[in-house]
Image 1 (cartoon, helix red, strand yellow):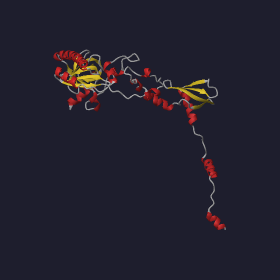
Image 2: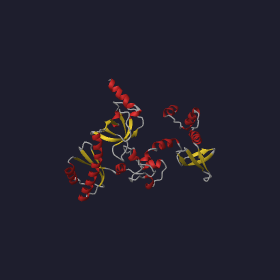
Image 3: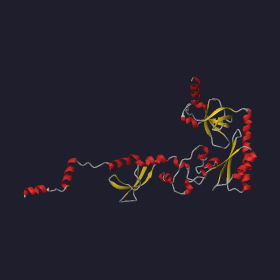
Length: 319
């Protein structure tokens, strides 16, 4: 029990968080470690789903509070120990073997005339499996290719087809904003993106303006979508008529970032005015204020409207 509690304390310390990279020019991962004095460019052994894998320390990561037994810890990478000399040399040789496997697979694809594009080759540190990532427009019969690869490398071979988003994530690049692609720098899972998000943020619906290098909608359209949607709920929509300083006006534009509303007079459309948040909120409250009608007046008016019915029994008695 005492040892478990000490492990929890050591993992939850900010100094035990690091940034690592499994391969050069790949996505940087955040991890935790019980080792407190790891330095940059140092090789460590990291626990993965299949086995220990080597990685390079990039630097100290942001502080993250993590305790053992937490469900969220399952998605956290944990550094087990430093790599020894033999593992360091095998790690350098591993990247050379991946390049050799990539070149050999490219030759086989050309010889078999397969309509597929090889993206990356990943080899397990223990040599138990090699994964070949590729893209293709349609289904590819690569059975003969797998036979040739197994005969060459004498290990398990897996062919994994990628979509265009994952291809950009692996290759990397620079986005239209001038920064590194979000998918290759920190995004782990792709969120669904729709054209409705661009409309909600008043963006031009030009495909070249709202699409990334993968020819799909920009992932960053999801970042501020919830903020725009929540802010617009309280703002008057374009086309709504308001009474501003006893003058009937119509809303023409809403600026969500500045929280301002542009209105124009109905009688004089050339005259426009920009309302700050305090101004249009006051106008909205006045327009939504219900008219007060007394209950007695309402009941009396309803009685007058009701037609009087003469009963047949009364007429019979009078006769």
